[in-house]
Amino acid sequence: MSEHERLVQLGLASGALAGQAAVVTGAGRGIGYEAARALAALGAQIVIAELSESGRAAAASIQAAGGVALWIQTDVSDAASVAALACQTREAVGPVDILINNAIVAPVIPLLELETARWDQVIAVNLRGAFLTCRAFLPDMIARQGGVIVNMVSTDAMPGMAAYIASKQGLVGLSQSLALEVGDQGVRVIAFAPGMVDTPGIRDVSVRLAPRLGMTPEAFLSATLHPAYEHRLMPAADAGLATAYLVAKLTADYHGEVVNGYEVLERAGYLSAPGVALPTPVAEPRGAPAAVSLPQVLALIQRLQAILDETGAEFDKLPVFARPLAKRGFKSKSGRSLQVWAQTLTALHDRVKAGDSARLQAELPGLQEALERLAVYYHEVPQETARFTRDAEVLQEIGRIAAEREGVIHDLVNTVATLGGDA
Image 1 (cartoon, rainbow, N blue to C red):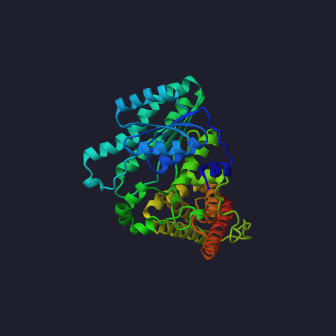
Image 2 (image 1 turned 120 degrees about the horizontal axis):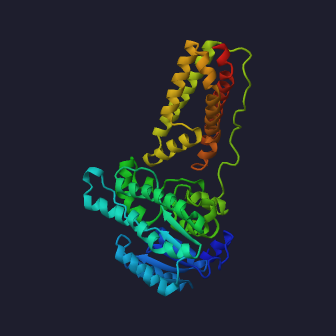
Image 3 (image 1 turned 180 degrees about the vertical axis):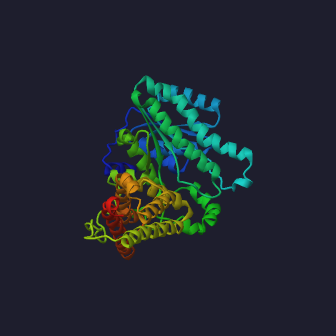
């Protein structure tokens, strides 16, 4: 399938970005090149800001496919080089409408072995470079009350990549802060995490990173974060399509936010959203028991604590790179971290056992609301799991466990309504 056909499949017309100019840093290969190629297929004039000679071949390839592309050799970490990029770009294609900050350096070096110069280089390319390009191209965008800046960010913590992850998390903050500055001036700023993408860079990194994750390089390169890519990473061309669709269709939806490539491609209809049909129905609220004894209440609290302990153990079995993501998702949806939930249940257990009805009555509304949020988290676990596997037996078992856990929480929600008066 040609690039044009793939874009049509996403509902994008070939001239959707006609007349617009786009600068893509680090576009000599990988995601940057594929993003530049997709934007060019939509009619944008492309400036490839690339330090290496690969930028020349990338521009020639886009031109051969009928697009407009220019390579300007650029060191994004150098202020003078970025200033020259801005000047040459304005002369060649006019004011820039789209800026994709994709240039990266990603060494795998334990922090205690990381030399200061190497740390500085990573921060300079990955974070300072985005600052310099934003500062260079933003004035024209503001003057014309329009423009898009997409800053490529990455995964959560990984061992041996402290500098890279620090730079990318800093880029998230830069994106969100800049979005607040320019949101009322027509400029849209987005932090875009394409996903686990098969690129020359990640293949180079996998040799050194995979052993630190307890994996072989082959297993690392077979990691699946969406069932559409079973036993493989997302192809770089798909990441390029996601970037183009984000720029052409979704900038208003994700201004000031972090979004990943899988979500964008699902919204485009290119990937099917997983988990539409659950393997087993989730538990419904069961209604309050006719009579609740003190031992029953304490047993429910202890059972929920055991569920949270099981959840923590399940997180620890995930690949190292996936654990922070899972824990962050739990905290976001349930409203509290596993540690804070443990403290909450310990305090509840102590109050119930002591018959402290006055404190329980005061805390009851907030506690019930928190428990409902926790139930929602477990309600959605089967759907989230369906993003990573198509194994029907696994999904069936996950659905059963999630329903059981949700049922325990609903029982406790119904029970705590009686605690203030009966404990």
